[in-house]
Image (cartoon, rainbow, N blue to C red):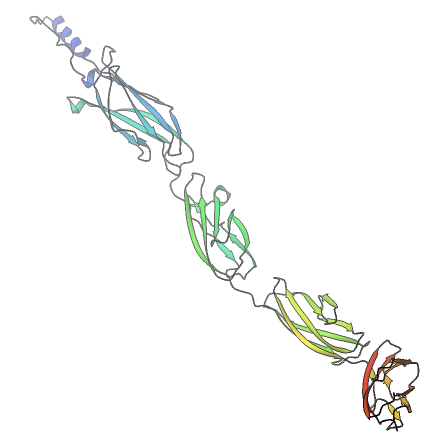
Amino acid sequence: MHTGIRTSLAGIAVAVAGILGAGCSLEDPVIPPVTGPSEFSTSLNLSASPDQLPRDGQSQSVVTLVARDVQGRPISGLRLVLGISPSSATLSQSEVTTDAAGRATVAVTAPAAGTTGNTITVSATPIGTDADNAIPRFVLIGVLGVSNSSVPVPSFTVTPTSPEVNQLTTLDASATTDEGAACRDACTYAWDLGGEATRTGRIITYQFQIARIYNVALTVTDAAGSSATTRTNVTVTAVAKPTVTMSVSPTSPTAGQPAVFTATPTVATNHRVAAIEWNFGDGTTASTTNNSVQKTYSTAGTYIVVVTVRDELGQTGSTTTSVTVGSGITFPTTPFTVSPTAPRATEQVIFNAGGVTTTGGATITKWTWNFGDGTDEVEKTNATVTHTFPTSTIARTYVVRLTVTDSAGRTASTSRDIAVTATP
C-alpha cells in the first residue's frame, strides 16, 4: 500500500501571467528558481513489502520511501521522521535520510501474538525549513491472526475436592473464560499436577500417588497465543488400611472334621473388600470374596492360620490364630493295660488297648506298637499284643508307644513307661 502528495510553484507562475494579461507591467519579470527540498515541491511515496504480516512478534516488512521534486528528480539528503502505530509493532529506526537516488528504507517488525489491532500505520514526515508545511505521508500494513484484547482467565474444579490416594480424581477447566466468554476447546490446557505428573486437555482424570498437598497449576493458552496460569492446592489423604478378626468353629476341630473359618474385615469408609486370602498352615491356601470358608484337616496337630483382607486399592490387613486339631481318637486315662503289671525280663507280657475310641462313626482299624527295647514295631488289627522284653541283669524302664489308626484315616499316638525287673 502506498500514497504520495505533490505540491509545486506552478500556481505562482499562473498568478504572475494573470497580472500581465490585465494590462499591468513589470520590468524584467523573473520567476525565482526553485531551490532546496521545499515540502511544497516534494513528492514522497511510501510502499511496504510485504504489505501483510503474521501476528508473531518476529516477521518483518520493509518500507521503502522515495522522494522526488516537482520535476520528478530524486531528492537526496532529505531527512524524514518516522512514526508507527500501534506501539506493539516496532520500527528499526525512528529517522532516515534519502540517498542519492532519493530512497530510504526502514524495517517494521510485526506485533506479538495476543495483541490487538489488524493494521499497522507507518508515517513519514519531511524535515525542512518550514515546519508548518511538513505534511506526513502514510503507508498501511495489514496484520494477520487473531486480535486479542485480554489474556484468558483460567479456572478449574477438582472432584472430589480432597481425594484419597489412588482415588480417580477429575480436574475440569470448563469454567475458563477468554474475551469475556467461555473458552472451552478454543483454548489449550496444560496441567502440572504438583510435580508428580503433567497432562493436557480441558477435562482430565488422575490418581494421586501419595498423601500430601499438591500445588496444581493450570496454564491456558488462547487462539491468539496469550496465556495465563492459575494454581490451587489439592490435599490428598491416605486411606486407612483394612483390619480383620477371625474365628473358627468348632474351636478345636478333629482331623477329618470340617471347620468353618470366619473373617470379620473392616475397611475405610466408601471402600470395599476385594478379596480374602487364607493360609491354613498345612500348605494349603484359599482366596474368597465371602467372609467364611470351610476347611478339613487330615492330620491332628497345631496349625497357625493367617487371613489377609485386601481392599480395592490393593491395601491389606492380616491376623493369625492358632488352631489345635484333634485326631478324633480318644485314649482312656490309662491308654493301655499291661499284664502282669510288674513284668520281669524274658517274661511274656500282654498289652491291651481296648479302651481307645474314635468319633464320627469310625472304628479303630490298626494298632502299631513300639516297645522301646530296639525290637521291630508290631502292627496289629486288634487291640491286644504280647511281647517279651530282653534278658537284663538290672531293672530297666521302657517307653512303650502306641499309635492307632481309625477307618477315617486318622491317627493318634500315646505312650507309657513300663518298669521291667531284672532276670532272676
